[in-house]
Length: 186
Image 1 (cartoon, rainbow, N blue to C red):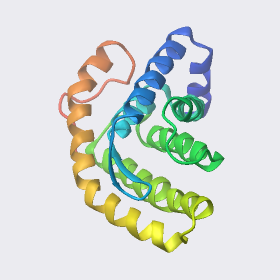
Image 2 (tube, one colour):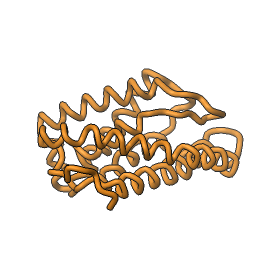
Image 3 (tube, one colour):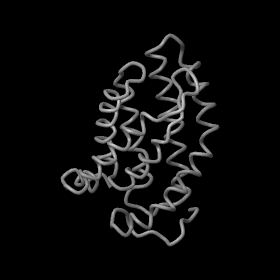
């Protein structure tokens, strides 16, 4: 998985695809709904998940790095902090671990989104916020936990819908392995 995805960094086609996804993520990062101190609702996760299933974990790390730097330069939100770059890199990496070069199932989408929500968003996001701002980890973690728990089922449904719509096209373009005609639960 890692070797194959790393080879994508040598392919002009995959680099072009990655560049398009970086542009989409940067644009979508500027579109969000603020819901509290350092908390916002964004739809960028949909783009990240689709990108991850196409380019894989190693290019996903690179894409996350570039996206966060460019996004911060264009849409500065809060302080610049390397921890947020790590979170952006891990987002795509985690989705790729579940979705790259494999049959995509509803269970894999649920697991990928759950890990990203609770590990990257709640745990790491709260850690970074507590290091940057005046309130402690528990303050940020509790607010983030509530937000991510409430949004998780909605975001999973959105992921399933997006993948059901895009998988036939992605298969036709040989960007993902052949999938079943209907997305399976397991």
